[in-house]
Amino acid sequence: MPQDDKGFGIGQRVSEAELQLWNIDVGIDGAGLPPGEGSVQAGKAIYETKCVACHGAEGLGQPMDRLAGGQGTLKSAKPVKTIGSYWPYATTVFDYVRRAMPLDRPQSLSPDEVYALTAYLLHLNGIVESNAIMNAQTLPMVRMPNRAAFRSDPRPDAANSACQTDCR
Image 1 (cartoon, rainbow, N blue to C red):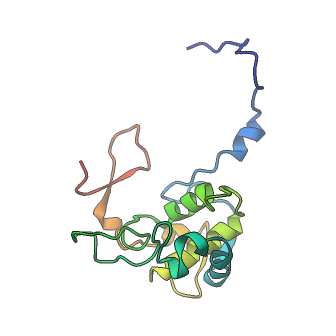
Image 2: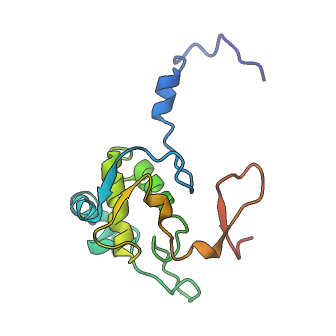
Image 3: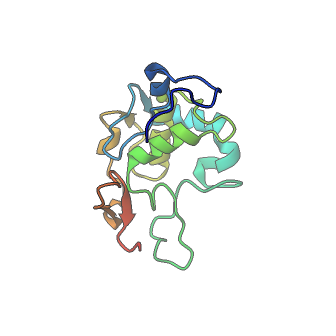
């Protein structure tokens, strides 16, 4: 469809630099991760000031979703889907926190804060040690417990997406 140079007479053209500010997606392989790093300990401090009111102590939920625990419950009558029991890629934890959290101020966290929170959340789920440092090199190397339950989507228009092995 040809672009109408006249437009609707509202707004303005977006520059490439302005557009890049919104180009924050992170692939499951870590493509798009920004520079920076964060430790489990730094993440705990950030969590206690910016996350605990919604996600509870140690990520156990209330009033919002539970973030930790739930391992071994997915095949039960009441599965508990958390970062440690369900999510297939650690990079998607970073991507989600960066885009959507905190709920009242999404995209307000610095890359260092997001790396630190991701490290802490992974630690709460027993996935990384208490001395872990997450950054663009270490985060994609984290192997999530439920990764094997997901498979790549072979459709050419669904790059980097995944589906659980029993999804339809």
